[in-house]
Length: 263
Ligand SMILES: Cc1cc2nc3c(=O)[nH]c(=O)nc-3n(C[C@H](O)[C@H](O)[C@H](O)COP(=O)(O)OP(=O)(O)OC[C@H]3O[C@@H](n4cnc5c(N)ncnc54)[C@H](O)[C@@H]3O)c2cc1C
Image 1: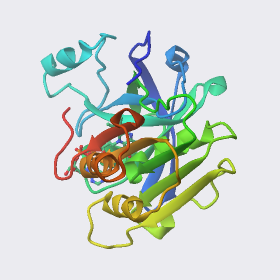
Image 2: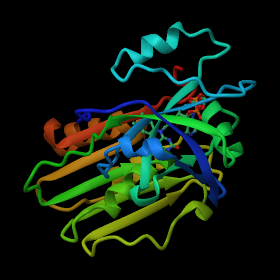
Image 3: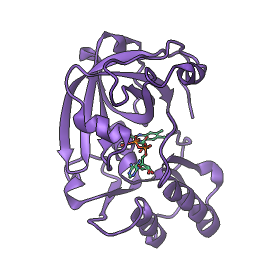
């Protein structure tokens, strides 16, 4: 991960909540403190702080070093905020706004917060940096994710050079979650996969689709993120079955089936 050289805790408020499709919503956060965020594009990740159920305000950690986590854990639970990882989907520095896109899934804390978020609600962010770091001169790229990584992959594609050549596998819960209109460079092929009620763990359709794909010839860089079995399983497949060098793969386990994120 490439972490930012300088960063600080940023307190914002919800500006808008825009439902995109059955399982996605975009929460727009804004405020003057966004002047302290250096937008990098790609899969720029933040820790997102939001109040727990029953809390009326947001108490942010004050330390802007990795010691923030210890500071958070020392707060009594009654005033300690929730914290989860999310991707900056889009920034509009001219109006001090960022969009975060949530894949909604059941009654988990971040999902619930995103469903209910309304203008004026407080939230905070802390920049964690990026992991999408393709080596120079790699002829093409393989980008793979399930719904939780759709925002990151769409942000990567939006900022990509027109010369990018890529195969992109995006798994979503339902056909209605597919975004047919995304603009991508000419050399990019996007394969949307919808589970549509099939009783499979998120990420398994994307993993199967890549396994079955002939893929393009030549060296390629892979960026895969999402449920841990997708990220780890794809890396294993590429290394063991296709002879891909580990150094050409970035794999990020975003969440683990059946386990809540800490914080
Ligand atoms: C670097 C990074 C960037 C991320 N960016 C995004 C992003 O932009 N948008 C986004 O939606 N997510 C993103 N995620 C994933 C997100 O942090 C997790 O999904 C997180 O667990 C959500 O918190 P929660 O409170 O909703 O669920 P938790 O309290 O963490 O989990 C509760 C239950 O829900 C399950 N669960 C968690 N996430 C999912 C899911 N996506 N689908 C189905 N079941 C799930 C867990 O296994 C657990 O059983 C990112 C994660 C990382 C590490």
